[in-house]
Length: 149
Image 1 (cartoon, rainbow, N blue to C red):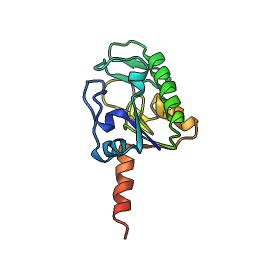
Image 2 (spheres, rainbow, N blue to C red):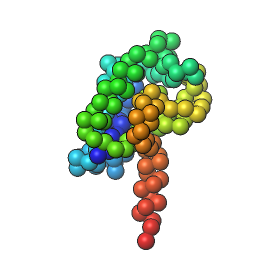
Image 3 (cartoon, rainbow, N blue to C red):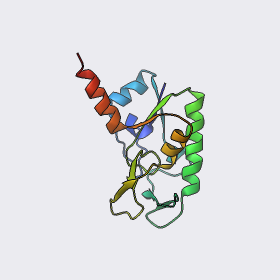
């Protein structure tokens, strides 16, 4: 079973109340092959919400300067519990998200500056030994496999 960022499945749970639908991933949810989660919503944050970024020290702050680290950690723990309950063995998460980003996130300056790092949930999954791909990596892998004879 695959764990999936809910916004990629078409759920309007992004900070701005929109989604990041990837049709191929939404189809996996429809077929019962993927479980959608939004750690930020699971942590009690509203939709829409003030944009947040992860600071170099690991804290998460929103654009107003409010520390929302607790909500991000709570949501990550709740999403991990869902992952385990469904025996998910891999996750496809939203790139660059302060929750779900893998390998590259925004630096906390709200200037669209990217830095190496993981979102709170992606880091927790990786610590738990669950492989994480961004939707971009998933789509590249899928495209490469389709091109194989």
